[in-house]
View (cartoon, rainbow, N blue to C red):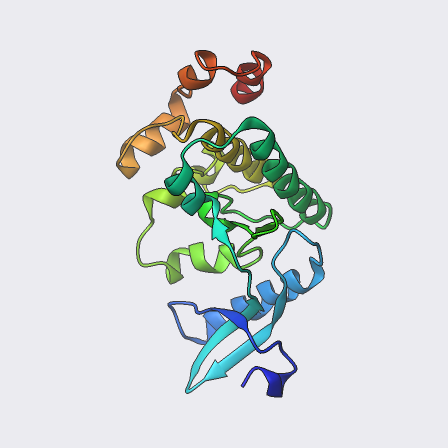
Length: 216
């Protein structure tokens, strides 16, 4: 019962696949981090719950659709609308990075757009738990597609989030990924060793300065 714990009546649950003491310890640690990230563009954390031996994080419930769903429904998003979305995600990251908190999994599926246009970044603080090798059954292509080169080498920093934000911005404007490979191995090699395919921006009706920005 959410109300019995002082939580709102409607909440969202994040349930780790692995249910052991180490997973719970990591969940508690990450929820402590999330509790410090009080920002209008970051989904809030209410606490940790347990039901019949299964523990989970209890977070703010956000109505709307993810950027992934929006792109599938609408295709490329107009420049000004894309800019407004990316600006709000950037403000969330700037706030978190000032506290030395890294998301680690910025991608369209982790960005929610409310009906009023407000943006909420999902899974902030929980990404490390869900991506931890011990607690993830498989590595999805959707996650690999937004990983920065250093993440394949086991290093993650603030710039890793900015890399993923740049890829997300590119996809918002074009509805294509700059590394258009379907399998993990090809994606990884392309991100590590190849230049992104920026032809949709270079040949589209965009400000020429965008190409330089994306190349950075």
